[in-house]
Amino acid sequence: MPQPAHPARPSSGRSGALTAVPDELTRRRFLEGSGALLAAPAVRRGGAVSPNERLTVGVVGAGDQGTNPLRRLLANDSVEVRAVCDVYRPRLDRARELSGAETYRDYRELLARSDIDCVWIVTPDHLHARIGIDALEAGKDVYCEKPMARYWDEARDFLRAAERTGRIVQIGAQATSHAKYGAALELIEADRLGPLVLAQVSFMRNSRTGDWNYPVDHRIDRWDLDWEGFLGPAPPRPFDPERFFRWRKYWDYSGGVATDFLSHPVHPICKATGNDWPVRVVAAGGILLHPDREVPDTFHVLVDYADGHTLLATGAQTTGKGLPVVIRGHRAWLEVGRDTLTVWPDRLYMDEVEAETVRVDVVGDLLVAHQKDFLTCVRERRRETACPPELGYRVALALDLANRSWREQRVLRFDPATEAVVPA
Picture 1 (cartoon, helix red, strand yellow):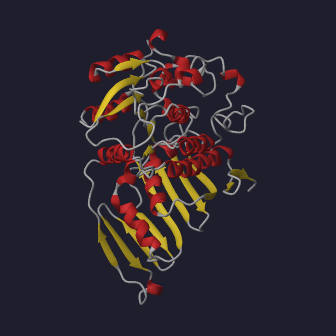
Picture 2 (picture 1 turned 60 degrees about the vertical axis):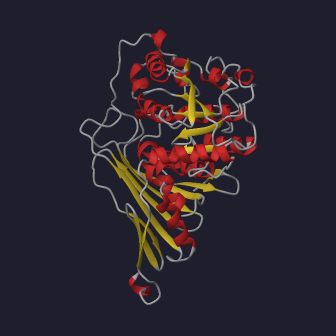
Picture 3 (picture 1 turned 120 degrees about the vertical axis):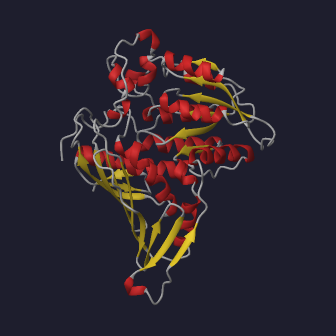
């Protein structure tokens, strides 16, 4: 296994809570005076919203990925996009032309508006938790693209903020809105498989040049980009367009294959298996074909859960053939198809377990379904979204520990009772 390109996350002398900002970061305009700007309450602090009333939305992040959610929101007659924020002026100008909404360079100015019900977070991973927590404290409901946070302790703080404020949170892992994962959980809870042993998922995508090598404008004007705003809670760095445009390749802002690729199948499979605590994590893989990055291009994870089962998750930018989605129990195994769930009895238990295929309705556009689920929960003030923060936290925990395992070349253990990494 290759040595990591950079040492593990630098210590800031804090316990992990985002509320304690490192001294060297307090000078940044990005984090200055956030409390004063977040004092304004949201229009609706409690009670259901009338089905005929349009929800008002602010979108933070207007990059290429952010444009797709924005377009979907603009096409939704039940919402009104009133504000968009981005640190890069050309993207902000494009969003203004597209939506007609007010635009901001500083997300705190958007959160200070009292006429915004919901905030959509479509930023690089390292900004998710800080913006999410601030939005919750400002009285907004939050839709946050996956992963919930760059680091597991940030996800924990994000969850605590959701619990403390009582606001609605949806993590943008859209596959969790597919009914087959809820149906799989019902079969498992009905003891159709026996004690769980192993679940396996993958996300494979071959690439000749390596994913995330988006076009870079090397002539970018510093006036056009709020570099300090982009860095946010990440370590200080000299101005570097490569890091801004291709942020997924760097540990400061991204969890690489784990949080961009594996996050897609791991959220729904953890939902299907009951969202237990990860207790031991180890990862393998490396930078095999694309040396222009810090994060590995091939990544394999084993996660042991408190109930005794193990998750195998593998992702790569070096091959396009993935694994079948399977959940194995002691007496039977469950094959998860596109619109079917099939229970196959183990040969030792064929007299006790019946084979069965359950057909599940196929969701057309999962992104649309996932956003609709969030908006319905906001209207009904129902906190159990398709991908709630409790699920987002434990997935972020497993994937962050996997990245740490690879970088530190060791097995990591987690104690759910103390919510702390403990000696292996």
